[in-house]
Length: 373
Ligand SMILES: [Zn+2]
Image (cartoon, rainbow, N blue to C red; front, side, top):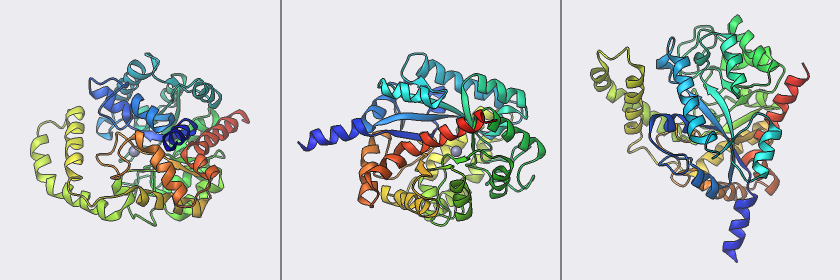
């Protein structure tokens, strides 16, 4: 009896996650998306009730300025070859298209760019990506672009430049989701001033609970929510608990000399540098204080308290993070997260919104915002 009920829950669950780096993992390894040693694959999606997923085309800023576009295209082609062409997921170009795929029992996959450096300062390249099916872009990654500041780099433009404003205006006009995860607070505020459409932070937590610069201060949570925007809670322990953030930073400090020695003479090889960076990222999480799903839910509760339960959802960052909460190891664990949300007092309707409906509704508002223009 109990078993039957839990099965019904999984079938009913609509999990739609706003951010993962599975495309990079598929690009760099000989794995099939059917079953892979990744946080997300088709088997885990089936077990976890994951019905729709935003796949980020992440390009390490180390590839900028001249090799970012090529790397972006390589990662995007890996996603085509391994996920869309074999029919393991349907590429979602509209919310109606996603709804149809999900209704037919297929995984719906959205494609976003992660890092504005990928378009190499070109509005035309941005338009080409849209034609190829890209429906959103995270404006920066960990480094400033020429037109927008990152939260983890020294301030340069102090927000958006004139080119940055043209880029977000084009995204608004063409119905691409504008993602302010990774950008500096000043950039996020400039974006909110520059456009009328709702804006998302696809994978960011609350700075009030964890003081990492990647997380959102309360005033930005409120501003994003007031506009009908979306905030996806990030599962990376460093963005959940500040103690873990400090431990990882300290470990990187200890690795600095070793990294310098290993990369000397290879500074012209971003693929190699990026691999080394990932290797040490994995080492830096060893021995960190454990983080649990309930610590993540604290962030969801806080974001909902500030912005309301219609602005918050999931932005797992799966396959882009070297560790996870102990009891939330991969996409198969989503039913446990839904149960955790219920335990913390969210109603059934709110759980459904947080797990996926809020993100769907946000993307619909972005589509409609573009049509109105
Ligand atoms: Zn990211």
